[in-house]
Amino acid sequence: MRELSLHLIDIAENGIAAGADLITIKVSEREKDNLMEIAIADNGRGIPSALLEKVADPFFTTKTTRRIGLGLSLFQDAATRCEGEFHIRSEEGKGTEVSASFKLDHIDLAPLGDMAGSISCLIMGNPGVDFSYAHEINGESFIMDTRDIRKELDDVAINTPEVIRWIMNTINDSLKSLKSG
Amino acid sequence: MSRLTIEDLKKIRDDTRKKTMLREGGATVKITVHMGTCGIAAGAREVMDAILEEMSGTDRQDINIMNSGCMGMCSSEPNVTVEIKGQDPIIYQHVDRNRMRQIFKRHVLKGEVQTDFALAKIQ
Image (cartoon, rainbow over all chains, first blue to last red):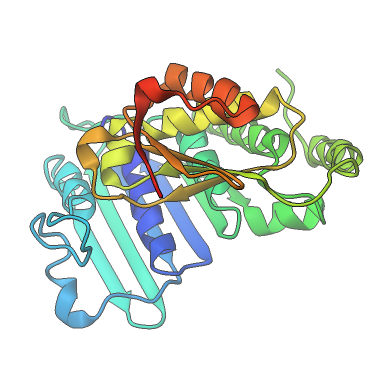
């Protein structure tokens, strides 16, 4: 994956495939700790504890369409090659949380990439799922929650192109103002 | 650029309401972008962005966009399936922005299957 935000789409799609109707995404970048953390939680069906230790194994998958499962192992690899950590917690019937940390100044750190594009892509392709996205940069943060947006939209669909464009622009604007401090 | 506000969102809502009053019936076209690990790594997000651009340029309200998982044909990703009501679904392969624009303009809007990048017809 060229960008960390692409991993984020991938892990979120796992949650949606597991029947989640809410995906919570948290990104935190703290220069003083030289640390970036990404966490993706879903309220899907969860992973049985017997499988949990196998899920990051590239040669393990529950799918029948193919024999490998690379999503989690690639994300784990992206974190560990930047001297970060990778954790996955899951409870059957409640959901799964995948979290990864990265050393911000590590030479192998892939760029976070187009967060606005990734989040809006998820919303556009999964109109039945809610997304809560929080991003913190050096103590300043913003939150975008599709449940709030739906309230404003009332009967208008969230995947209307103009709404998706508004979400994309809002995320870009908010990130820009976070970065400028 | 001025900051976007909730007021902008409300305006979008009201404009969309006016437009969708003209809508008749439900979706007649379903576009599925396969977003497994393989699809995402191969550029499925850019394909979604191209669809968003094309959707913004049409008044058609009967086109549904969905994400789905990997079909097991990882080497031909990004894959996109176009399903027009009453016709066999067509799976496209190695779709990029340009291919997606062509698929949208010709197949989705005009019903012409783009055989150059079609991988399969589901019967």
